[in-house]
Length: 84
Image (cartoon, rainbow, N blue to C red):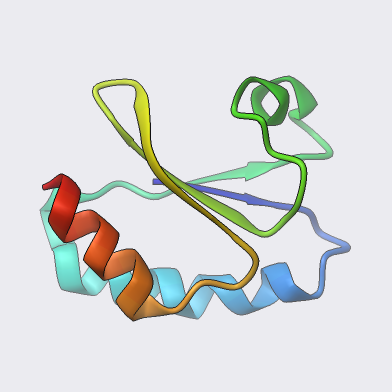
């Protein structure tokens, strides 16, 4: 799972506690990476990120699900359960 964010983005600051809950729920089944779109615009471009915050779920290097804006724990959990 990749959390695309920027330091200046106020809604992005709401995601860490949500992602902590997801990590607790899925423990060893998910790894969460954070990508600052200002520092790594190339990665954001490859993943077609145009708005932040954005959460992207990958499996075997392929995008399986993405959510733009502040996501709820339940929405991310449902997507992860479908993928795993």
